[in-house]
Image (cartoon, rainbow, N blue to C red; front, side):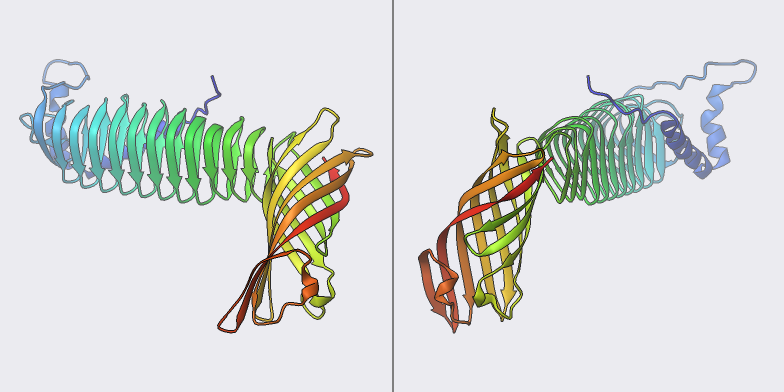
Length: 399
């Protein structure tokens, strides 16, 4: 069993306490006294357990604790259709509920809930679609769809379905489905599906995909992490500027290639896949007087042989603009890193590069020594595509 974050202690009681207190303050004293008088009849003390009344098809509540569905008496009702002008404190729901402010229910909820501010459910499971302007709060298992302007919070039980929130989604246990949030998604257990957030995704383990600026998994990621920073103890594929994956490949090397550039290359990734970034300088004379810097970005696949020689296949793209012209180079390269003295390796590579030139200047023939795939002109702009074989060699540090 994966470790599960305990988010219930303190926070749950605080949230429920604030919601109940708000409803009590909104309730007129006379109405509250009238609808709770059944708890202490004159001359005797009765049970504090609320009365459970039969199923009612329709319930209309004008104020908290004031209902027109059972002789104006408060209790636990099981309703098919409920309209709350302000808010409602009631029992299980099977059907549809619309609340101007919010709804607090004890017991299972199935069907549909729509609230201007909040839907709160405790001591029961939710199998429904919940829509709230601010908050959806549950303490049991959830099977369905939750949409909130601010926050979806599930403090206990597994979640299956979809959570969408403007700020944050929290599933304290396992989740199977999708979380979409403007800021953050949190799954305390194993997340099977997708997490999409504007800032950060967190899960104990991932079987699927995380997309955000920061992606964190405390256990293995069997899937994809796509973001600026990715963190996991082990990952199938992490694509980002910074990948913190213990035991994965990280390499920094300097290479010279036959296409006329010297490049500083950085590889950083997961168990088999890595991100490829390069910063190079073009040496051909035809670049005289122009910016010679080339920046590359791509990804690659790598593995290690029994002789501790590492091989990799990289696909990366370089692009630059000068004199109102566009120069692009896309490369597919196979390379091997032969160990010399730890952590130093000799890197040898062989690949193919497709050069694309689009501009108004005449291309010097010395730019490419390959096969011209396309040569054309449109409205004074030349468009040429050339395929050229590439050989590279250099030194790299793999750690």
